[in-house]
Length: 187
Image (cartoon, rainbow, N blue to C red):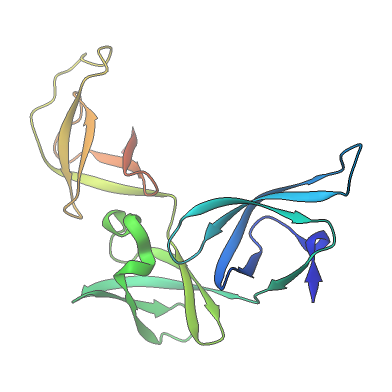
């Protein structure tokens, strides 16, 4: 069994009967009292983040996960069909495992799926996605200094706020974690 000296960013542990990923940790040795480890943990199922303190040397339950690359193919009812890049086997994954970022991935995008044995623990989608604008009000050249925004509908059907100079058929880089416009991609 592992202990707090085995902590590293990205390690998945069983904590409070659920799976958590260590986002960051810090060993603290105060002048008085025992040493401890301050951590920020993210629930891999819900995405909820919490802070927790462990005593130095405290035993932890490390979960061995296998990371595999899959390609998102298409949406089917309330699941997404993905294909293993090595074996070409297709699996259906519930939409909930993709989180909010599901609205920003397009077909043929690569995703990382973390398995605990046969169980899917977590689906990691790319941080940025390049999407084409299919509908928005006309853009105005030179209107970049005001910081004003307008809604734009993207090829996946989701709407984001973009600067006024964005036109239909522009390709945008969007942050899949926040759903915010990052930049216009040069063609």
